[in-house]
Amino acid sequence: MYWLGLIAITLPYAILCLLILPLPPVLRFRIISGWCWSQVQWVRITCGVKYRVEGREHIPAGPAMILSKHQSAWETMALPIIFPPFVYVLKRELFKIPFFGWGLKASSPIGIDRSNRSESQRLVMSQGRDRLAKGFWICIFPEGTRVAAGKRIKYKHGGARLAIALGIPVVPVALNAGEFWPRNSFLKYPGTITVRIGPVIPPEGTPSELGDKVETWIENEMEKISGQGPCHPANQR
Image (cartoon, rainbow, N blue to C red; front, side, top):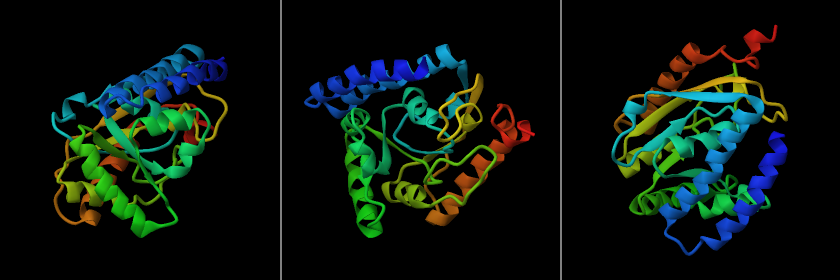
């Protein structure tokens, strides 16, 4: 039921995304985020995947950099309906996905070529400034990929470097979506995802120092919210 609804909703939205290209970028984002809202609601209705947000009071009034835990496809749809308009920094290959890629590109993301690191860094800096000027925040998953629930990898410092260069604070986000919607899983499992938003971290120090602060906060919070879902390794023994 979920996948059938996904297809039924995505096809007309993809066409809509082509029609709204002449509109201002932030307005396009607000229209496209309606698709995100529909998917979060649809997975709740069909699969019982709910969520709660803790720490909304930490969301600043001005532009910021969101650095979030990444376990599932769920947060890519949920974060746009939790935070003010923002753009993702992501790999360009995603633009080639039929229908989904159309909407993604219309949302003004910063697309990078991972095979060309120096060029990617230059584009992220220049396009980051451009997106801020247009009224967007920026969101990066510092792990660089989805990481299964209960697993941990070293965070990359590109997001921290960009935050320092742009002079914008960092908003760290911990979440346990992978315990209910596992990475690369066809199945989703009922329960309540916790999204925990942390206090703003100023863009100070070196990229590694700022990145380590973000990683420490997120992983400390992950220890507190992990183990609530059926797909956490501790609950599968």
